[in-house]
Picture (cartoon, rainbow, N blue to C red):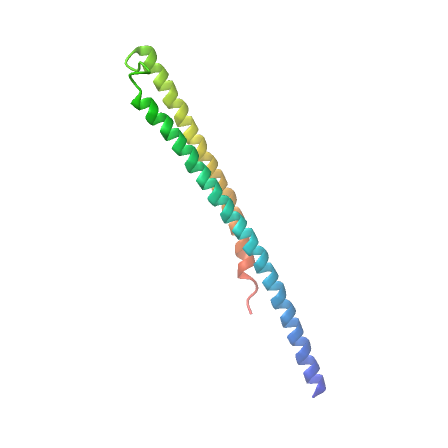
Length: 120
């Protein structure tokens, strides 16, 4: 009977150790997840801030077309060049956000296994 009790205690300790290990892995995954989400949120807010700044510049330029002499060939060309530059800035913001999204997705895909853990 004591042999069975010893065997049961060993199995219990082994199970506790396994659960402690899974708990540690889940806690590590939680920290990584929190960092990924915080980083993604900060990047999204920065992208929005940059896009809002670009929109303000474009709105001011459109509103001040008369002051910019946009009704003249040189003024129209300068307005055109300004708008093309703003379009490049917008594309850069979107491209950076897309690349960050891909990087964050890769990290999240890696976390999936840590949360799944072994069955049993």
